[in-house]
Amino acid sequence: MVGVTCAWYLRAASHQVTVVERQNGVARETSFANGGQISVSHAEPWANPAAPGKVAQWLGREDAPLLFRPRLDFDQWAWGVAFLRECLPTRTADNTRQLVALALHSRALLKQLRADLALNYHHVERGILHFYTAHADYQVAKKSAALMRTLGCDRRSISAAEALSLEPALRSVAARIVGADYCAEDESGDAHEFTMQLAQRCLQHEVKFHFNTTVHRLRIVDGRCQGAEVFQQQGSAPGVPTVLETDAVVACLGVQTPALLKPLGIRLQVVPAKGYSATFDIIDAARAPSISLTDDEYKIVFSRFGNRLRVAGTVELGGVGIELNPARCEALRRRTEELFPRACDFSQPRYWAGLRPLTPSNVPYLGESRIKGLYLNTGHGTLGWTLAAGSGELIANLVADRPTAVPLRSLVA
Image 1: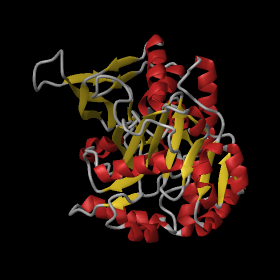
Image 2: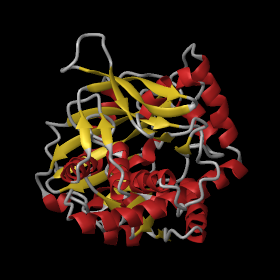
Image 3: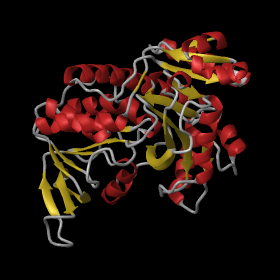
Image 4: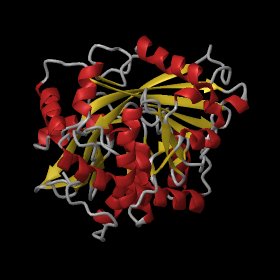
């Protein structure tokens, strides 16, 4: 999603654009089955003063919302130390301001993009409702909501009765809800469908796509990035790379970006944050939620795509594979059935896992690197859908040497 959106804005700025993709189509990895939320109201970093205590509390729980798997890996521990530093109140406040500014800009661009291109990806413009079942967490959330409003995001703290009025499908747990946040301007939609449709619009505007193609290394000539050597599964002799000559390169490889840039002396602090989702077919529309929801207790989100309900969440740090953990999958199914009994066919869940590129601060690497002509657009973590349009447009402005709508003070690597 991040790469295709960036390609669109670069082409709109009159550049000739080529997208290199190792899969046989777009949005086949991290953008395939995410939670579907465009959530400016919760563009808050995982790194916050409460995070260390929560992580310690969840240690050893296979179904924990945030699971840390320690490994004998220097980069992982260095990332962990940096994460703890970003949990300091002053760092968290600064990171929140940057993320909200980018998210607000991105949401506005997405609305315009959808209207201009007539994109239809099961988007729902009914806001996001975040409900709480613990009084202490709700009190903290009230302070966060107040901060969001000062930053230009209309996140309102509402009562349990107001929450149930907005989403009657929560009636099964009505007695446990102590309050909620609601942001009417937030949205939800199918990120995979969005990316496929936008890729088609890119093709219609002469953007080239090289599928089944892997980047071997970038070409640096006289201190400037001038293309890449790539391996294509078809069309070239085994072991012989194809050279793509370009004026500039944008690295949007998600969790693969650090490995590509490390030989160039650029060390990005990005780790794979494994997330899970389950997709259920809705069999009783009245019992299923119609507003995109966030369940604070379990840190999972619910988004409705027509007759499907997407449930997603959790962050698992410390692994690189996408094998499904049965305990974490079952936690999604069990909680969904508890909240919305008989709403879906819970006997046929479609599970998925993806690796989200997470920085210690949650702020992405966005801007030109110290190598001329090499731009970074990665590290969006759990906010890829929320920040994609804004990130792509900002990169296009940087490449064209135009002012950016959002200051890139510390977003630039």
